[in-house]
Length: 288
Image (cartoon, rainbow, N blue to C red):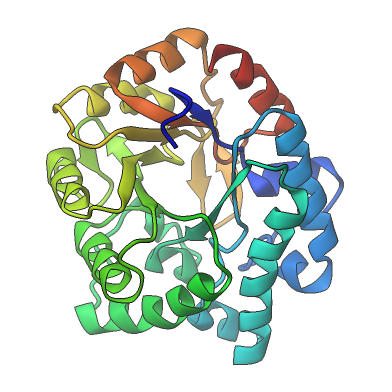
């Protein structure tokens, strides 16, 4: 991953699917399509590859055994969808395109916006049980790396990294957090503490921010001197309203100046999250 100074990530998979006319609402988002129409997910991934993406993030973010059970799935359904998530990205990839298996937070299974707040009030054993089986299945699919993303809580990050260290210590990964104010992740932990924890893992290739407002990113990255390169993929700057299942607000436009500042701070992986479609990634390609 060091041959190019900066690699381009994809954008919001749900955004790309909606652009193709697919409905991705409900508690499982793209997970439903990974069961009913994985080829459609592959086509959406392909749009990002053609837009210039070097790395595809799988649609496994919203898939968990707890969350899928709430949607009426059995364990076999969940396993099949998790396998399909990596297969769909592989189908879309060019030679050299990396596939990152998305590992979403516990809060995503609650479908109430908890990934933007953290502090779930659950025990470490609950988090271990939640993540262990899904991680095992995702590792079986042999992704190129793990995208441990949209994480609001340092304790949960610690749980996931401990599981990876036990089961696949050589698996490359990045950890990216949600940030709701400069210098702190959504659950309240200082940014420096997250970086320190991730830096302890030899297989970590980056640490950073995703699905957060553009305005908070540069001040957070620049608040410390990180020993680990950064990964950055913001959302469109709107606020998620879990009650209405909609994004609220006017959003922020991404500019070349933002990207330049992130790279100066140490970003080596840059892309977009919710609200960024294939055309946005194509525009970002010119800057990256």
